[in-house]
Structure formats: C-alpha cells, structure tokens
Amino acid sequence: MTQTSATLEELVDQFSRLPGIGRKTAYRLAYHVLKAPPEAARELARAILNVKEKIRSCSVCFNISDDDPCPICGDEERNRKLICVVEEPHDVVALQRAGSFDGVFHVLGGVFAPLDGIGPEDLKIAELVTRAKSDVEEIILATNPTPEGETTALYIAKLLKPLGVKVSRIARGLPMGGDVEYADLHTLAKALEGRTEF
Amino acid sequence: MTQTSATLEELVDQFSRLPGIGRKTAYRLAYHVLKAPPEAARELARAILNVKEKIRSCSVCFNISDDDPCPICGDEERNRKLICVVEEPHDVVALQRAGSFDGVFHVLGGVFAPLDGIGPEDLKIAELVTRAKSDVEEIILATNPTPEGETTALYIAKLLKPLGVKVSRIARGLPMGGDVEYADLHTLAKALEGRTEF
Image (cartoon, rainbow over all chains, first blue to last red):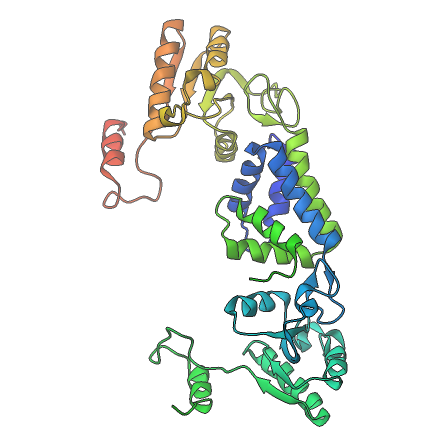
C-alpha cells in the first residue's frame, strides 16, 4: 500500500500503541490532530511530556502528585490515623469521588502477581508497615476483590495484625442497583457472609 | 473533587478533546502514558508535533504528503490522464488499499456544507478545473454517496462537462456481503438504477 505521508503513519502507529485504540481509531485521531490548529497539537504534546516530567510520587502515600507531599497527605483537615490501602492511583481518584472518606491513602503500586514476578518487595508494603507503627488507629484494605487483590490484602493483614493496629477490609457484596438474580455466586456468598443487622 | 495531580488532569482534558474519547478512556490513556517509559511518551509527543510541522499539501492533488509533489503524483507509472476526485485524504488511503486504481487523485478538502458556510470557493474546485483543461481523459467523482457528496459531485460535473472531458461517478449500490432485505431504500433504488448487463 502506497502511503503518502510517513509522518502521519508514524502518528497512527503511536496512537495504536495506546490501550484500547485500534488502527481505525488511531487513523481518526491522527487526522484530527492533522486538522486541528497547531496550538492544540502543541498543547497535547506538551501535556504528554509534562506528565512524564512533572508528576512525582508522594513520599508519604506513594500516590502520584505534582507536589511532595501530595495535597491529600498535606491536608490538615484529614484524619491521618485512618489509612486506606489501594492498588493504584486511580483507585484514590475513585474513592475521593465517592466523597465519604476523610482519612489518608497508601498506594501499593500493584498487587501480587506471581506469574509476572511481582511479590511483596515490589510493592510499597514495607513502607506501609512503617506508617502503621506510627500513630495510626485503623488501616482499611481496599485492594480489588480479585484473587490477586484478596491475596495481597490477606498478606498485608497478617503483617499488620501483630502491630496492634485495627485492620479492616472494604465490604464485598451486591453493587448498588445490582440484581440478586444475576449476581455471580462468589459475590452472593460474600454478600451473605457480610450481612449487617437492620 | 480533590485531584492529586493537575498535570495528569490536564492530559486527561487534552485526551478527552479527541474525537470518540470519553473521560474514562482519557483517564486510561493518561495513566498509560504516566506508566510508559519516558522514551515512549517522548516519541508520541514528537509524532504529534511532526504531523503539524512536516506534513504539507501536494501542490498537484492537494493530498497530504511529506513531499511535494506527493508520491502518487510523482509516480511515473500511474496514469495521469485519469483523475479520481475525493473529499478527504483518508479517501485516498481507502482507494489505494482497494488496489485497483492506477490513476491519480484530486482531494477537494471537503464537500459543500451550506450550514457551515462551505461553498465552492472553500474547496479545491478551481484547481480541478485547471487540471481538467490539461491532458486529461476521464475524471471520476468519488465523493461520498451522501446528500452533500452528491450535490458537490453534481456541481463539479456541470463545471467539467463543457470542457469536453469524460466525467463519471463511482457506482452506488449494495455493498459486497450486503443483504437486499436489509438495504435501505435509497441504496436499493441506486442499485437498480445502476444495474449492469451480465
């Protein structure tokens, strides 16, 4: 196939390396950039570079942040005795959006994945243990309810228990708006197990 | 909502301005860039800037190209007496992919769109007339079979006819693998009208 512009092809290639972007979508995006005002393209390119240059890791909670400590760890009004442990930075965004949590976070940077060779030393677990030894009342384990997330939570709980800190796990059950009829058996089992009194 | 990184938010904003990219997808893309090696992010940014800096318009056919004339217009083996008129550069890519056309192209840069104020003077129609006056045998109008594309084709056909050049329109009918039962009535009407003898 004769292509008229290797430069455009290169951008199509680059876009199609992004997750969930197929070749047709990559073409549409590349044409959009081609037709957009030069300033818009420069802003997009700058935003991409900035993410790599400006974003660092908070030295307290290991969430991504422009500043160190991050705005959440630096917020005097939050309860620092309550730490919510999550897998990734986007979990913090989701929990912040829910709006009901006023404690601080701890981002592990992943979960155990033996097949990919990811074990305890690849996650920020030692750092969590250090935080747990300071003035902390409760640590909520909010890793995903997947086999990997459950294993990681179990491992961390066993490490933290001897320190005398209260360790809890987020509830697993039917999602709001969900349907008992269509729920999978593991979810139903957890929903029954975790039932609360009216 | 407290965000921890304005830099990441800015990239999410930028991505969500692209066509077909919603906010959730933009987040996924931004996290991907954040986790990707710095070199990958630099390559993506560079590809975006290159598209605006390096791609020009072929002075013969007005297709996008890294060179002027473009590789198609510069190809000695193609039949320059046969010009296929299309709306946009990606139409050239599609027709090239089909592989059966060995003539040259003319990219209008759009179609008539009265509501957006796009008329004949905004398209490369005068330039097509100039080309038609040189040694050309046939001009194939391959604008889309939409109301706008049909109107534009009709307008151009009326301009070119007096010049004595043969003017044709690509066939409209059932797509290969299509279904008579499910075809819309305009397509069926065109398919009947354009029937060919066995």
